[in-house]
Length: 129
Ligand SMILES: [Zn+2]
Image (cartoon, rainbow, N blue to C red; front, side, top):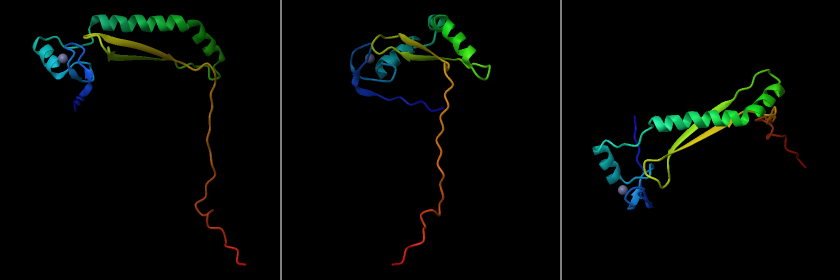
């Protein structure tokens, strides 16, 4: 396992305000402090609860459209994707942004790209004048 920590020297730490924050918004000093205190950023019960609620909400919101898409489906099947993205909040310390994305297809989309290619096509006989 490789752990990469990148430090953005232009970004202020979301806890102490000093420049030089890592991806999670905290500077290395604040991360070390939190680890010592046992207060590490984690996916706890509140985040899990938010994930569940947002998934249910997005399904409820799209219920009618999902049904329409299913009825339109030519294969008789409808893949529905739910994606949850967790990211530390930009400015608020120890806050997680929970984003849920639903994806399904309303229309049958078919897109093809093709080309007939010959490697010898460039070698046309030269015209001798
Ligand atoms: Zn800090």
